[in-house]
Every structure is written in structure tokens, then in C-alpha cells.
Length: 325
Image (cartoon, rainbow, N blue to C red):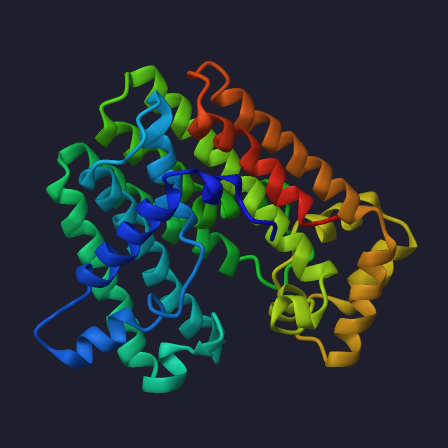
């Protein structure tokens, strides 16, 4: 994906360094083994978009540096994200993540599950230190992540999956945490409540763009660009928006896909399905939906003061779409 304007904020270098330091400190324990498990993906890197979003939301009033509590709010959200990745990798039997072995591949599923649980517990502890509203918000968000993931799992290999089911799933498993990151940043910064609500709406729309772009890239990018074979979602039976639009349109392409999908694919079948999707206008339609959500995101924060942070927020969802070419 294209670099987010959020990462180019003048204070972001300092604040991202503070995020990294706080992340590593948050998983340090008296037991070196547990510390290694919990920090494995954290030290592998990542863009830290969720904590950076919390910081950007905190800077929406024009301040030049985030408070320690704003940084901690973003750290709590990142710990939830990484903890969910530990669990996702177990479910997917993934072997690599961020260029390194997954925890489940290196230490086994049991350790990965417990380590993921530990990260969620540390996130909850940090959220509680920021007040009951933040603690309740993060707990609710973890529940939404679970609902979103279950919604995806229950519709795997179903060619009758609806767009409504797709939107519900990605809102829960992806957009909810971006929304919460922005809301926590606003709450902890002490912004007016209407600003906090606007930032919450922004984060949700941004998250929808983020997941739609990710789903499109899975169908259009090369294996070298993705770091894994294209069409992974098709192989896993997860039918995303471009595919659903083809089904909805009907015709020969829909018929061909219906004949192929609904079951695990061989590599040759996956490549055939990818060719059908790439030759259709389902991808263009999905990108158009992404632009609609990007416009919603920008509109949500249009009334906030003009400064570098809010300018970055407004342009960030469109930068995601630029990665699609």
C-alpha cells in the first residue's frame, strides 16, 4: 500500500519512536520466554497505523506533540491488532508474517494462542489506566473483532455470501479498531465530544477503505508485491467485494466463477479464477466503493481545525487507494 500521509506528520518520527518504545515495554515480563513470544511480531516491524491514527487524532487541535497518554492509547490498540494476528495465523496455519516465522510456526499453536491472549490482556490493562470510558471502548472493540471474524468464517466457501455480510465482517474485523484508535486519541486528548464523534466516524470509514484496498490487492498484485501467492482469499474461500460484484452481475463470468468456487482450489483453479476476476469490472466497482468511503472519511473531519494533522487525516484514505494505481 502507498505510504500514509499520517506517517509524514512532522511529529510522527518522534511519536512513532515513543510508540515503539512503549510497545516493547508493554510486553516486557520477568519471564524471558514469555517476553520473546509476546514481542516476536512487534520487533518484526509494521507501519503502526493504528497508534499513529490515535496520535493524529490527538493532534487535531493543532498541538505539536502527543501526550504520553495519547501514545499509550495507541499502543493499546496496536496490542489488540497484533494479538489478533497471532490468533489469525493459527486459524490460517500461516508460516510467515512480516518476513519472519509466525509464532505458531516457530513455537506451536498453543503458545501462539496464549501469547495472543497475553497481548489482549496487556491492551486491556493499559486501557484501564486511561479511564473507564477507554477501557469499556476497547473491550467492546475486541468483541466486534470477534464478531467480524466469525462472520467471515461462517461464510467461507459460500458463493451466496452477500455484500451486507461482507461489509459487516470487515467493519468488525478491521474498521472497528481504526475507529477506536481515532476515538481513543480524541478522548485522551480532551477534545470536544463532537470532535471525538467525528474522529470515530472518520476512523470507521478509513478502516473500510483499508480493508477494501487490501482485498483488491490480494486479487491484483503479484506474488512478489504481496509476499505470498495472489488469490489467497479465493483459496481460503473468502469471497470479497470484487468477487461478490461479479456474482451479482451474473452472466458468463459469474457462471464460470460459480463452477470453480465453493470449495478449495488447486493452484491451477486459483489462477483461472484470478484471470476471470481480473478481466471483469468487479475490481473497478470495488475501488469505486472504496472512493465512496474515502469521501465519507474526509467529510467526517471536514469541520475540524485546519492543521497538519487534520490535513493528513483527510488525505490518508485517498493515499490508500493510490496504491491500486
